[in-house]
Image 1 (cartoon, rainbow, N blue to C red):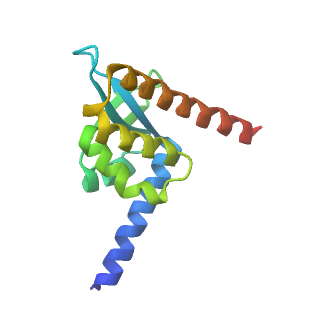
Image 2 (cartoon, helix red, strand yellow; image 1 turned 90 degrees about the vertical axis):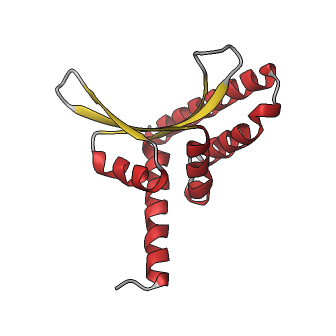
Amino acid sequence: MFTKIDKRNHLTTKLAYIAGFIDGEGCIRIKKSNQSGNSYYITLHVTNSEKKSLELIKSIFGGKIFYQEKSTHKIIWQYYSTCSEACDTLKTILGFLISKKEQAQYAIWFHENKDTLTIEDKLNAYNKISQMKKHIYENSELLES
């Protein structure tokens, strides 16, 4: 039987694992709504060929899991959450993130302030987080060289 400390350590381990998984396989974005020209929201998206880790994220934070069959007859699984659900997830794992920490902080800030931002501020935030994503990708390529 687990003690309270054992349960807390077990949960901490899961959160650290999820953060590492999101650092490596995740995507944190600000998306423009298709419904109106000035509506933006945050998303958290993780893609993997193995479903079990995505199910762990969903079991703790909610969200949805989809699958896509690739032309090689391989199934790719996708975890997806948006808005408050994504923000809550990012807040919870923020202390464990490394490469996507700045993106997560920015997405949290955006979500919490989007109602007071101008259309221009929202567009600037959309562009800034896209640049952050590109910067992470470019730096990971440099490390592999």
